[in-house]
Image (cartoon, rainbow, N blue to C red):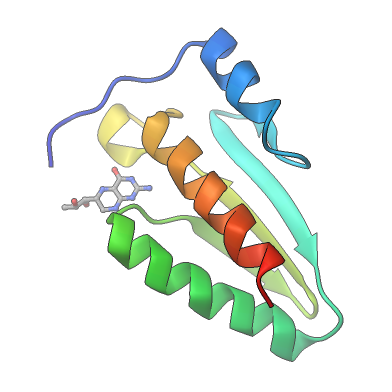
Length: 99
Ligand SMILES: C[C@H](O)[C@H](O)[C@H]1CNC2=NC(N)=NC(=O)C2=N1
């Protein structure tokens, strides 16, 4: 896949204004979701996996019991945040609200 350009800090802050709970740190978009159970957390991860395959853009996933922490960055941009990360964060938000 072709290289994509990193977003400016301003562009990232503008995108985050529409993504509640997401933060920008260490060249990643990050959020922790808390669910009612391990089962729900894993179900969320599986649904993210299908979406990531569809978008051909993959998150870093960390699960502890009922919590899922996500970190989005673009390897092809030298591990910086790009429009692909914003697109994936928006898709994940939609998934999180459809249970
Ligand atoms: C070949 C394939 O398109 C690339 O490896 C894709 C797959 N998923 C990816 N995911 C992420 N997070 N960054 C990438 O640069 C990336 N590249």
